[in-house]
Image 1: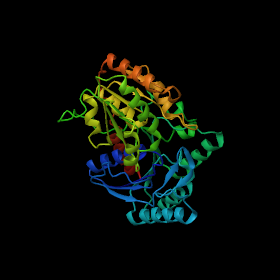
Image 2: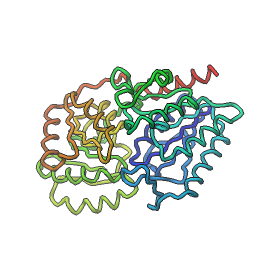
Image 3: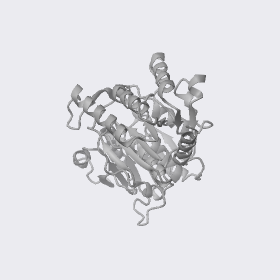
Image 4: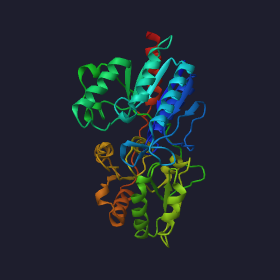
Length: 379
């Protein structure tokens, strides 16, 4: 079976990371897997076994997802966007997938609707139409007005055979964040949560007993790192390790290093072995994106979540609220973030100790493969 996944991450790398986790599950099941990424390069992510095509890259202007920038920071003009659309359509025609999966669209990425719609039409017009699926996380950005939800539903009904909802309906049903009509509900396939295999403790015990601070692959996490340096000074007997991601990571590391002084802080770029460090860590400090939350649940590491809530973003706050009742988890709103508050929150979760860990419900990637295969067999 030939599988194509189309994804564009505009802020951070969470969407691409989840798409690659799906891709690995298809590869492991023996399928020819082609991932098309329209966001910024993210070489630290594992794409082994897949064909990975990068479109001319885009990123958002901070939290303004309607203002799209090129890799060099210029506003993406019409020819640039048309070049992406042309490359995407040509890839679909050349690869001719049996399964086409679009990540987030049409429930998001409305600023890229032209290229996604062109891709969907190209797929429909192939000699053998593929099974077309959407792929969405547990919590979406709620539509700002009913017409946006109505338009998304129209696109689903016109093009899609199903929507893979990477959640458990008994834990976080889609209607927590998105209006689900009877018509849309008939196309929903809940997969469980999409996560890699639970991390094994680091063989070299890197990160043992430390507070690990991460903030995704974008620059929006800088206030978290600044507060962490201040918090570390208040806990001199505990080392804090700050892992900085993004295209400008080295520049931001240089900026942050001037504030460290005698604070017990290690400052370095994001590491591919981060997940292996988590089980041995004293605590984790991070935002509350989908992938990060699952890493914490799988590792049992005490955690302080600082949900990303700039602009009108509510997804991470909703997710944090759903996790806040669990032991050894604290949610610190960004408006309350400072060194004192962060130090208190970390001390509280460390004293609460690690949580028990369940391996149930994290096989959403495998379930997605099973769903896709069953739909192909019906056609």
